[in-house]
Image (cartoon, rainbow, N blue to C red; front, side, top):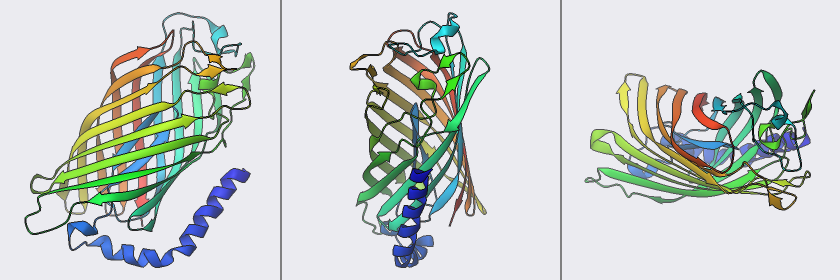
Length: 327
């Protein structure tokens, strides 16, 4: 709780220290040219994946709630696999696993080119009816715009590039037990370790046809927790095409693309933790709806191919929903 309080105090300090910059941001509500536009990228990462959304309210601060659920299924049955052993893993269990996460997230512009993003998640995970609840690890990120297309009378195609990074704080539960023993690390809401996150975003739009393309990459460097367990470093990339359709006060953004993630094996006491690591490719699709300052995001990810190391639950689907308010 002290760490969560620190994050809240830190964000409050930023708000008061840079109130003058907000006056500049207000001028961007009706940008006169393309170079006034700041960003339409939003980021939300978690242990098992990463989702990047497109936000027409690029020039505004944002706060909201996001929910996601991941489903995994295994082939054989062994209830003992949930109990932590010398090498914790997913090996040898027939089960249906749901990883559910509700998070408070937000975006704040320090300057028109620098934005800070945060998320505070709460997890409610389920394996064959066995529940484990608790707060997850909070994240604090920042991105800086390094390039934007110059605006002129002939400009029909604009581009933006962002680079940034941040940290994941060990605020979540990572040693929670059930009646039959200690739950293996991947089922815990938190990891118990500080992690370092590096991000990059590319956004472009063909103005004449309201068509766009966004690509986002995330690389996470994980550290070892007090249980001598270290999740492997993880690389994610998302690439999607979108179309913007306006209807009065509403804006509709259907989008479709791919999402890929890869990681090597985890380590436990310096040795490889069996049944961890691999890569998976998803097809993604969804619809974002905007009404004035409000936004509703819906995204579905379905696995196209996966190459997992050892015996691990197989991906079935990932669903993301979010409700935001821009100000």
